[in-house]
Image (cartoon, rainbow over all chains, first blue to last red; front, side, top):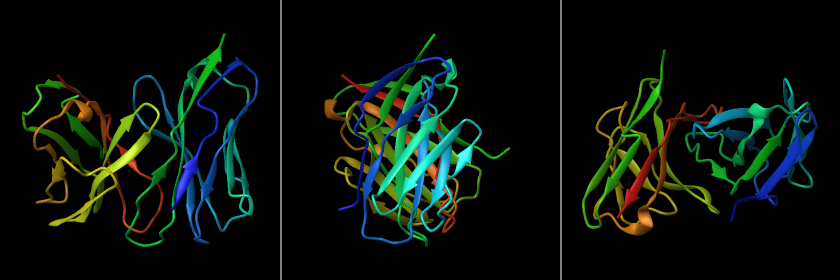
Length: 116
Length: 113
């Protein structure tokens, strides 16, 4: 079965610090896509970053970057210079199919608190 | 601007009642999905559709149904609401074959009393 595991249910860090959220996944596929979604208290689901498994270069989006280790099936999210607005639930997710089946499998989430 | 909207944002209903949650998207996406979000479970797939007249069951489909009569809408119906269906429901859509991730609606919080 394809699964996504987020081992940290909850984390807290001080504002301006760097924090890393862990994610591992299990799949027998070779081509897949990985995502991190942010869900702030407003409940809206926001795509933070996307990684294509066949690309070795780690994706970055401003203060957000990933450490993608394909052999280890690991996909961690690093938030640099954390801000109060980064307080949210973060979901790791992936989809394995290249064609019409775009079903995404989500982890259970990590609740991140940025402390002033 | 294109968008995906869910209604209502909040709803309280009684056990045994039929409830329909609306989802409407103007992205012209073929793929639409319904998930439920529960603490400790993340997001779990209920039903999904790849186009008009196409519907498929997800991992937690019991007690739910969907229908797709046009590209824009995928309403989710709870046939006979149960307390176990108290949850936050998200609708999402995506463009076929691009794997860019979903565009999500803002969710519906449903409470069954």
